[in-house]
Each structure stands twice: as structure tokens, then as C-alpha cells.
Length: 113
Image (cartoon, rainbow, N blue to C red; front, side, top):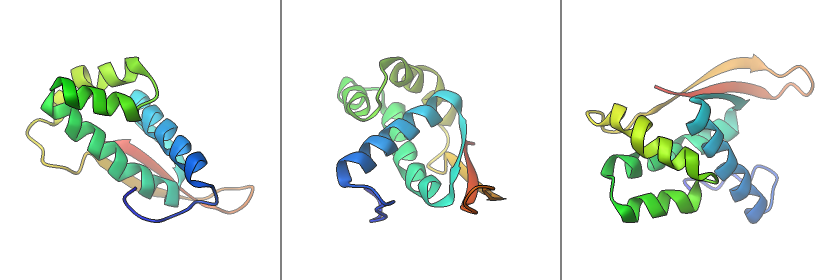
């Protein structure tokens, strides 16, 4: 993991949540979550896009071991990564949208640039 934010979960639960959120972000291109979760998802998503730019079988298998759905991994390698061939990082953008109504957690939108 890029940092050591525990997000109130055990290691297995945290990694499962991050894997699912990265998969959802790659599928939809945009998602709304808390700021701390967005800061954790960003580097993991950028790593997956970097793997997608290389287009080797080993990179595909490595991405597939992290991404929870095969169709999203295929979309990553065929549609998403080719858009960023001339870009060296900075594939995601995070911006804050204010507090959540229920518990006043700071919310953010993370999206692919």
C-alpha cells in the first residue's frame, strides 16, 4: 500500500475494499467517496493504468490479480490505458465536495483525467 492509513479496517478487509473501489473507478471513470479513501485509491489506480500501458501478458496478469473483474481489466488494457500513452503519471484527479450530511465526513470526487 502506498501509505499506512488503516481506514478503521483490518488489513484483509482494507485491501478488499481498495481493490473493489479501484475496480469501480476504472469501470465508471468517476466515483464519490471520502477524502482519505480517495487518497488511497489514487496511487493504486495510477499503478494499474501504468501496467495497462505496457501491454504485456505479465502486466495483464498482475493487473488481473488486483482488479476484481476480468471485463474491467480488459477495458483497462484496451480502452483506458491507450488514452494515456503520452502522459507520464497524473491519471486521476481528486476534488473535495464538502461534508457528508449523516456524519460530516469530508467527501471528495475522484475521477480519471
